[in-house]
Length: 186
Image 1 (cartoon, rainbow, N blue to C red):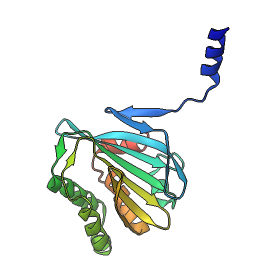
Image 2 (spheres, rainbow, N blue to C red):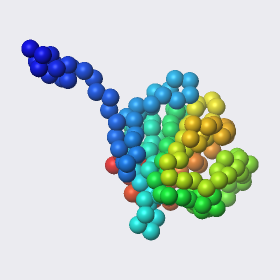
Image 3 (cartoon, rainbow, N blue to C red):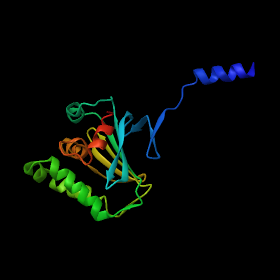
């Protein structure tokens, strides 16, 4: 009888779902900002010279593999970066951010974003080490909230900045094509 109860309990108890990528635990659902519930859209790894640098994961209100749809929505999102490489020098991190913005934005947009992009760079004022977690949360009406290891670094307003930031990974010239596919759940 006891065994039967255990079997029924296992069959009818909702399981907490999660995923794992390169040893990083990723929740299937999260809550950000003012109660925005997001689901894991996809995850992938950023590789460089055969080394896995970080795990990137994208959380959306509604799963989508359509880049235009993702960029045009005004819904909340989270881009989570979990560093798995032993250490990334601050200057390399900033160079990667600059490269991502400049490759995916035209000159006029970069001029409009200049002050906010510089503000964003200021939040990355130290080397990134294995175990660091960066959260880039878009909260509608507020902007991008940048958090490192549970400490809020700041908030950057603007839908144009939200899209420019996301285009680093999902734009025409993504940081890593495999990572782009992973974030899109492909």
